[in-house]
Structure formats: structure tokens, C-alpha cells
Amino acid sequence: MNRYVTATVWMAIAFVVPAGALAQNYEIPYQERTQTIFEQAAPAPNPPLNIAADAMAQAPEPAPAADAAPGLPSQDQYFTLDELMGEMRRLTWTKGDFTITPYGTLWANTAWETSRSVSGDFVLYVLPPRVGTNEAFNIDAKSTRLGVDVLGPRLPCWGNAQTGGKVEIDFQRNFDTENRSGVLLRHAYLEAKNDEFRLLAGQTWDVISPLYPGLLMYTVGWDGGNIGYRRAQARGERYFAISDNFLLITQGSLNVDILSDTVTGFAGDHSGWPLLEGRLGVVLGERGPGSRPIEMGISSHVGEIILLPDAPAAGLPRRTWSLNADVRVPITPHIGVQGELWMGENLATFFGGIGQGIDVTSADLHTIYSRGGWADVWYDWTDRLHSHVGYSIDDPIDSDITKGRTYNAFMFANLSYDVTPKFLVGFEFTSWRTIWKDPDVNVPDQNFNFVAKYGF
Image (tube, rainbow, N blue to C red; front, side, top):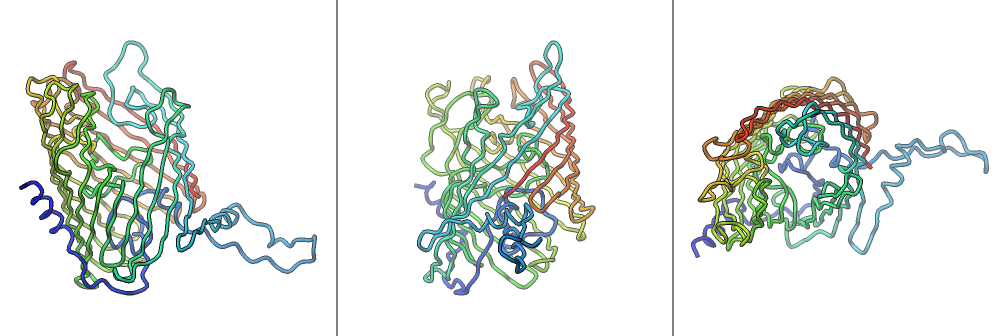
């Protein structure tokens, strides 16, 4: 019973029911991982790269064709590729009060690395060296993603809240060969939101640690210092505009507990209470187009994981928790810095502890503590040319690990160019180092990655 009381108190603190939601005609664009009202109201200047979210923006309207004689079209009657994409963008599906808009990102990358890594197309950590060559070359298109945005009717009884939802997939699910990939569900949720609150049910990003470094590769530092992933949840958010320069954000969610450990091989069962996540954030400074407010927050989660009968300690719960801090500071219109710090226990399902949550070689199957974080500096050379430079680290407690990975860190630098607002090409260099225990090896890896993304 105490667990259910705890869950109720947690959600009550994170989400105050909006008794007097504003009844005004307000529409918030769909957002990705950075859950702030500022980004919902207007995208932040110079954000970290997220072409999937950018692909949701409306393409330019084609210029009207000039009058011309039949059969003799004028020059203005021909469409450029971008204008044609704009025409296609308007081909949405309508059913009653609902509008369904498809979008996607065609994503291709090539990578060459000096040492083998998991999983090659992108890097989570570096593998111990093998006899013979350790270099590897990869070409990948599995990061391509497709999705639909759903816009529904407003709810007059809930402050004229806008209803909607999203379904999004990519092709990074487990595959038998690299050209036979499986469909991976990224997002599937419904929501109602206005400028005071947001309610969501379904699968999307975690509440905790909402930022991500500006990497070009598919994984954004997971298992290397950036924690947080996607999972099924019931979520509430509340926004308090204290003044024009101060916004307070509270977020809370009840989540499914998942055993996701890259070394155990054990399946997990659901606990008798949900995994709880919460975050308290602030936005300091003017908000809106052209503004550069400072955003920061603290977040945490707590829960437990149950091992199934194929584990040596079947049915026994294992605690998981984290304490996290995030900050994003745009310094000028061209440069800014962002980062996160975290610590916690049994974090494999959040891509912490280098994918290790439980020491399976120990007699008591104890959990693994870890800490880490990352920092990223971005610079926009021009409106089209962008760079990110940063460092990230995941450092579990060595004594908690009998056999496995005890240290994982990388540095990164990239340069990307927007050929058009929807077509990006970029080059990225990452330098990784993973330390293993039994066998005791210290493995470096230099990864060179070329990326092309075309959003529609």
C-alpha cells in the first residue's frame, strides 16, 4: 500500500491539475526530447540536430504560376524540388475532425573505425581486440524513420486543449543480416495540451535527462554518458508562467519497468508498482522566436526490476534509481553550451552503466552503481553551416563489476551543412575508449562517420 501512496504523491508533486486552464486558441508544435514549454511554443535558436523533428515543419509554399497560354507554361509554372515537396506536404489525410500528416527522414551513413565496436553502424562501446585486423567499414540505412502526426479536435472543457498524437518507427530492431532489418517502434502516443498543461499516454522519451548531445550518429551517446530512452508511460506536465522571464515546469510519469541489460541475457517481469520519473525545470529569460533563454532542470527516477525464472535469483526485485541535472545556455545567436550530469543504480534500461545494471557473475546478483555526464558546445558558422564539439563519460563503480566494462568515454567533433532546409550532409569524428575487466584491456577506437539526411 505504501508503494501506491508513494506513486500518488510523486505524481501530485510533478503535476498539479489545471483547474483554470486558459480557454484560448493556442496551438503548440509537436516536440521531441527536450520537454520545455519554450520549445513547444517556438523552437529554440540553434538547437541540437534533430532532423526528424525538423522534418515536421511545413515546407515553403510554391510560388503562384504566372498566366500563360494553354500548352505554353511560363517559367514560374515549373516547381523546384523543395516546392514539389511542399505540395506533397499538403497531401494530408482528413477524417472528420482529425488530420493525419505523414513525415519521414531518409537517413544514410558510412562509418570507418579503427577498432570493432557495438554495433559498428553506431558506437555504444568498444569491443576487446581480436587476433588479426580490428578495423571495420559500415554502410547503413536502417536509421531511416517514418511517422505520422495526428491532430484532433480541441477540448473546450479542458481549457481548449489541443488533442493529437504521433506514431514513429525506424528500422534498427534486431536483424539477422544487415540488409534484413526489423521495424522498431519509437513513438506511439496520444496527448492533450495547451499553454498550461500536457497529458500524454503511450510510448515516448523519458522525463529524466531530457537533453542530448549534438551528435550526427544514430545513438546520441547512449552507454557512453548520456542516459534516457523511450518507454510506455502515463505522463503529466504543468507549466507556470511566473513572469515574462521566468517559467516553471513540473513533469511526472508512471512508466513500465523493463529489464534491459546487454550482459545478463535474463528476461524481466513487471513489478507490483510502476517506475516513477519526475523533473522540475525552469526557463530563465525572454521566450519566443529570436530569444535565447537559459534552461535547466533536475530530475530523478525510482523503481524496481524483477528477474524471471531463467535468472539465478528468480523473482527477487532489484532497485533502480537516478538523480540527474541538465542545463542549456545559448550564449550568443551563434554559440552555446549544454550538458547533463547523473548518478544512479541499475541503469541499463536507461543506457547507463555502459549497458550493465546487474553483476550476473556475483553470488548475490547485486546491482551496479554508475555516474557520468556529457558537455556539448555548438557553433553556427552560418545559417547553414553548424558544428558541435563535446565530451561524454560513463564510469561505473569498478568494485561492483566482477567481469565486464568499467569505463567508457568519448570525445566528438562534427561539421554539418544544410544543403536545403530539409537536406543535411555532415562529417563526424569520435574518439572512444572502453576499459574492460577480466580480461583487463583498455581499448581505443577512432570513428569517422559521414551522414546524409533528407527529411520530408
